[in-house]
Length: 375
Length: 214
Image (cartoon, rainbow over all chains, first blue to last red; front, side, top):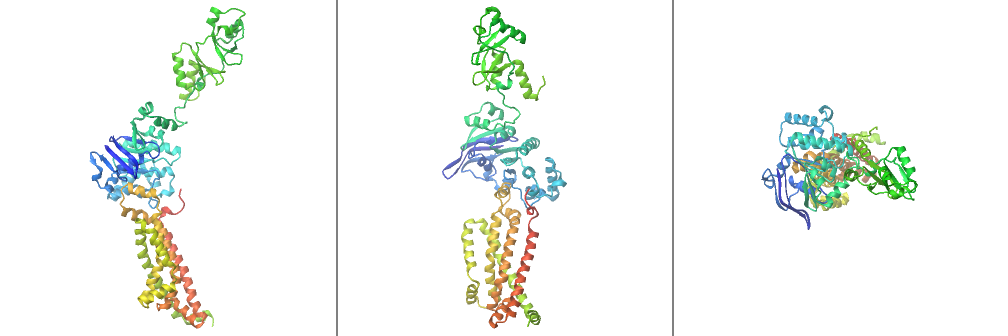
C-alpha cells in the first residue's frame, strides 16, 4: 500500500502538488490522468524519489520512503518511461538483467529470470536475447522496457506514459499484455497517461488531477457514470475513440425510410385506399411545402372521416416527431414510453426522413451488436 | 644526390629521429588522455564549469606553438620533458571536448531510466555513459594525435629530437633532402596513426550502436 499524506511540491512560486492525500492499495492498478501540467507525472516520480516533495509524507507499507536510501528504494520499484530508455550498448538480455545484477543476483539466476521474462511476452529467448535495442521495433523495445522493470520482481511498478509514443495497434496489444501481467503477477501499478481511453481500459481506479489537486478518484465505471466536473466529462468525450466497440448511434441510424406519406389535400377515400394497399394503419401527412404536419390512423378515419373531404382535417399529433440527430438512447426511451408505436424522424428542414419502429430499432441495434444482419 | 640515396645514407639518423618522434607523440597524447578524460567526466557532472573551462582550453590552443615552446623553454629548460609537457597541453582540447560532449549527449531518456531503476551515478557513468561516449572520445584522441604528429616537429627546436631535427637542419642549411627526410615520414606517420586509431574506434564502438536505429 502506498500512502500520500498532505504531499506538496512547488517549483519557484508555482505549486505543482497541493496537499495531496490518497492511497493506492496493494495489487491495485491506479491510473493518474489529467491535462498537461496537472501534476500527474510529478506525483508518480515522488513515489521512487526521483522528485522529493517539499512537505508531506509518502509511505510504502507503512514505512516513510524518506527513511530509505533512494537508490535501494528504486531497485525495489519498477520504472517504465515513454522514451523507453533501453541501454543501447547492452543486449536485450543485459538490459533485462540490469536490476537483478545491481542486486547481486548470481549469473544462473539472472539468466533464468531473463528466460522467464521473455517467455511472459512471447519473445523466444534464442531469437531475441542477444539482439540490441536498435534491432527491435518500437513495440518490442517497450516490451523489453516493461520486462526490465519487472525483472527484479518489484511489488510496485511505476509507468510514465509508457505507450504514448507507440502506434495505436501496438499500444492496444501492449495495454492488453500489461493488464494481463498485472493480474497474473499481482503488481501494484501506478500509471500516468493523458489518454482517457487507456485509463478506462487499464485502471482499477482512476485518479483525475488538475492543477496539482485530485478532482476525482473513482473506478472507471463510476467516473463514466458520474464525472465530477465538466473537465472530466470533456476528457471522456475528447478521448472517446470513434472506433471503440460502442459506436455512437443516432435516431437516423435506427429509422427506416420507406414510409407512406400523403399530402394534406388528399381525399379521405383515396388515402384509405392507399393505406389498405400498403397494409398500414397509420399515415404521415405533409404540408404543402412537404414539411411534417402530423399523422392519421385508420381508426380515426373510420370514426370521423367523411367522403370527399381532405385528409388534413383529421391530422393528430399523438405520434412524437424527433430530430434525426437525437441520440439513439433517447429515441429508444421515448419510443418505449410513448403510446404511439412509432416515432417520426425529421430532417432539419422539418421534412420527413423516416420512422423509427420497434422492429427497425431492434434491427439497427442487432447490427451494431453483431454486425450486419440479413433480414 | 637524389632523395632516395640521401635517405639510404642517412637511414640510421632518420630511424632514430622517427623513433624519438613516435615517443614524443605517444607519451604526450597519453598524458593528454590522462588529463582530459577525467576532466571531461568532471565537467559533464559540473556543467557550470564546462563553458569557461572549454573556452580557456580553446584559448590556449590558439597560442602559436613557437610561443608556447619559448615560454616552456624559459620556465622548464630544454629537453624532452619540456617538449612532452607542451605537446600534452596541445592534445587536451579535442579529447576533453569530445569526452564532455560524448557523455552529455547521452539521451536523457536513457539517463532517466537508469536513475529510475536504481543505478548510482557511478554505475551510470561506467555502464552506460562512458560506453556510449567511447566513439566520440576515441575520435577526439585521433584528432589530437594527428595534430601532435605535426606539432612535434617543433620539439627539435628545444633539443627534444624527433623528425623536426631533420627539418630544422635542412632549413638552416638550405638542404631540401633534409627537409623532405623529416617531412615525408612525419606525414606518413600522421596517416598511419589516424588509420590505426580509426580501427580502434570501430572496434570499441558498442555493437548496439553500429548500424542505424530500427
